[in-house]
Length: 110
Image 1 (cartoon, rainbow, N blue to C red):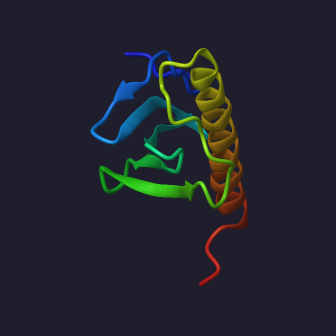
Image 2: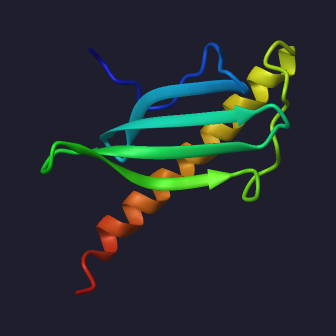
């Protein structure tokens, strides 16, 4: 299976109180999982996790919510909702790439 470099969101999955978007991609050449869960009022939680090949586990790189970024549309059926979720996921991906590259270049501080 080939993991794409950039996140791709094709559909929004309905959840009990809203909807969810998820994408597997690469963050700084490492497998990553980006998940955005949107509640009925447009508030959301987002996480970017990168697979740590040394411990064979997923490690959080970034957590964000509607206090960090603008709220998303509450209705997953609106045509513009998918575009707005895609834009947020692209921004989360770019931030995660910056975080991991900065951490790698700065190295351990202890």
